[in-house]
Length: 71
Image 1 (cartoon, one colour):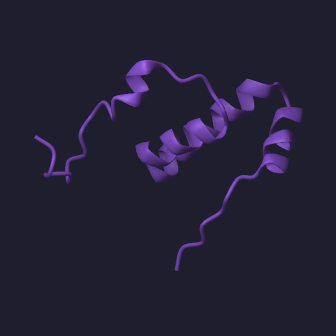
Image 2 (cartoon, rainbow, N blue to C red):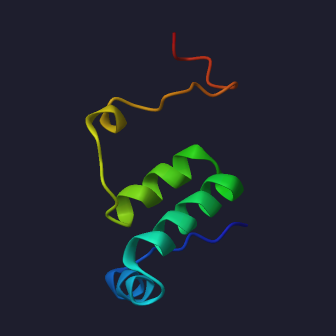
């Protein structure tokens, strides 16, 4: 069974202390995308307080191959 890990504020402050506040966070998002997919990376992007642009709030850019519910 999978284990869900929540990133709290203490973990975020430790991330910011190592090698620049944004570069580590971007690498974490990249690795999350590669390992867990686009949605996990998007959630992590928001959780790590990276910049948000209006297009991000409109939904995901590309549809999933298996998501047949969307037109």
